[in-house]
Length: 520
Image (cartoon, rainbow, N blue to C red; front, side):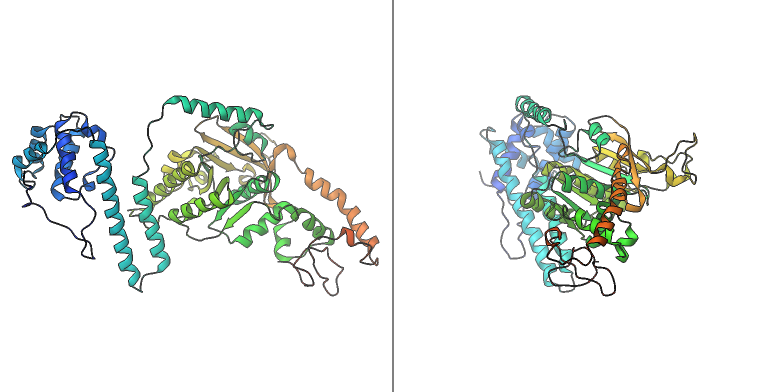
């Protein structure tokens, strides 16, 4: 039977070539949907109206989709009537053409296979269209190349998302995987099934950060969000050798590392900036930093990081560096370049949803810091709640765990609460949402001058030890002055700092053999 072509219009790409298509196969699938009861159910997850190249076939499949959505029977008569209701019956060739489509089908046995071919050709057409648009913009020298790259990544990400379909899994292999993970946790000395953070109460509540979880850590400014993730990154990367990546959108890498040095060496930030350290403090800096070198801690300071750029970098870090967790400081500074969004709230929602999808895809936990709105400042009770999350309720919805950092001391002048309890240094990590576990408060200690968080029962043990050792170290250094360098060679650091004229010799730390100067 001859095909009707009166109502068709071939569409060419900018090069004059016909895009990938198979209109015969499209008609076979449409005919099968109208003949076989279950045919549409087999293809509805594979095809959308735009999957069809022929505009006439798009309108017919739209009518079929409408019937399926309303749970109405799909056959030659109902599709004809739906097209009449839509006002497109004459545009597709009338009832005669609908009859011709069903006459072309002998069996619907392979309709799903045919639908996948149509979907692949649709994907190829989208790639051609995007590539042509990017090519045109690339020839225009007024366009910024970096913006074009992000736009291209966004468009490719949009295409790839439409192809992420998982098959239904019978429960048996999932049970086996769950039992395997339980057994692994049982064999683990810490009893944790996830990544250990070094904070005992938090690890007990969460069993460690779990793979594929999106964890939001939110607080008002000056509560210590960055200090907390840095302290946690130090615990995980330095103490437990867990590869960690930090994307810092707010601070430069050097600024972040200086704060990390202050945290690790128990040195005040002002001294780190000025370099005015005593001999004992140089000694402490030297000895503490030895364990940081070669730590699996990776930093990225890209400002205005887009979700597509993050996805590209995260995949590479997981593949090449075996990164086990990603931290983002902070979520509201990211953007969704390359995606068409109407408002900032929609953009934040898209970013939040994409972070959850990325965590699931890479099978690693992702921690994103977030700002809170000013609602806490207007309440008598300053403890944050989920509704305080800034700019989008989607953050609360998408996250597996939502934690708030709350320091009661910040809102009092006496260092005591209403009951007269000493709250100096008290920091509460409020686990307000936990999709697979308990919620509650975790008590931590915040050491403000070092911008670090410790276990509450850890106290100032490290500082006390340092203060006890300081006189002995200083006395030892003074007694050793005047000795030949040969006698002290075995105790020298692998880092070489030169002397500063007019001052006592400093410990050997940086910057390199034969060089002189003050670090930072």
